[in-house]
Length: 242
Image 1 (cartoon, rainbow, N blue to C red):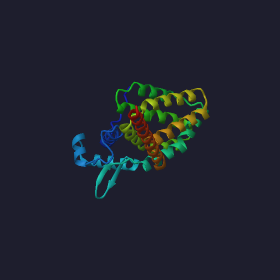
Image 2: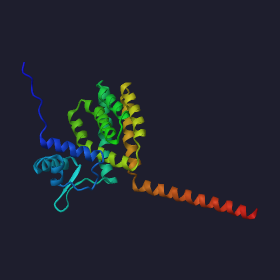
Image 3: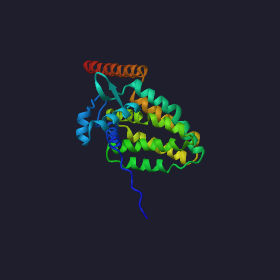
């Protein structure tokens, strides 16, 4: 019996996957220039597959192509993060609700959670996190809904990578993942969807607070400082009287 040869990934796909991995794991940082000749030398290919890979990455929103600045890793700010996460909030909980109601297998989500718990570095944890969320929404029974979420998946991972670099919070997210999966496996479609919505919303609120929230936080910090200063002054005054 003749064996069927396994297709060899194209050079473009190889370069695409490598660059994406470096971006999503923080090795290539937002705003960093991506020079075709340098990348071609690093990967041992010509500039053509690099150029095609960068075009694809621009289409997914991970890189930005400029006539004057060339190609750079996309910058992440509060507006960009909230645009991406608003889409997730609208679609992802509903996709999970449908997946649970139709009794879809969530074994892939369980496996991804196990990989995330056993991850030894940020790269492994980030990739496992992406796989976990995809395993929740993909079996929703609506291929178009799954593809729509796939389109923002890389951008969401970029937001997470930037947020984690500034303030690691994956232990908290891991606990929330376990609760989401528990509810889903128990068949509580609405409860799982609510938990997922809270999980997504709380993450972006912590990592990229709105201007009003930042102002409130600053006011609270100022009030705390003033109270502390007043308390120190009172103690100093009491000490002087004694």
